[in-house]
Length: 204
Image (cartoon, rainbow, N blue to C red; front, side, top):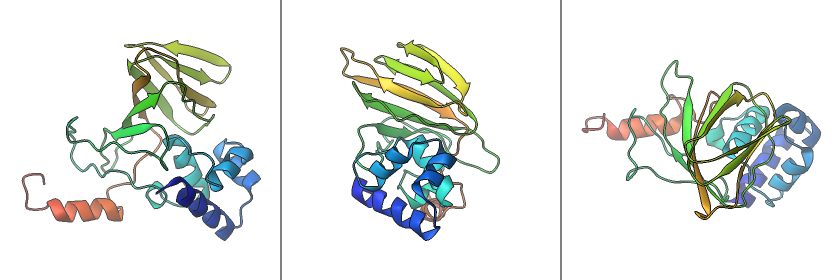
């Protein structure tokens, strides 16, 4: 879904459930100004921001963005499908599956130098591990500069943001692991359709 389409979908859903920008902002920890820009197609959200927006609107994240389905527990670099949120600057690669009782979700972020996410807060834990480049993380009043091999684990209820700092690599890559539900569960239509297609093959 492109940026204007995503914004229009969010605005239409917000109007349908009769919520104001201020109400959605209060429920998501985002600013009303940011949500307004998103609805007008002037910015794109991080994937974690989209999760809290979807929750505030009472929809599944799969209703707002198409993400690769991952039924198997193993992933391979050559087979993963990079994707972005509404043509945003960050590329994601899904690393985790979903099964009954699973609590951890994981993605790889690839961010161009100069990218900075919006401040967001949500339930659960969050942890990152830096693979390349240099990133800055703000968690509440604390700031961290992380290099290759560095990690950060924190309470995601605290407002936080990530930034790809200027670096000779021109990009930063991190592994993100968290307990917020980035991916729809195994009973979602997309997962059920892929399971149907894979049944009887060597993959299922």
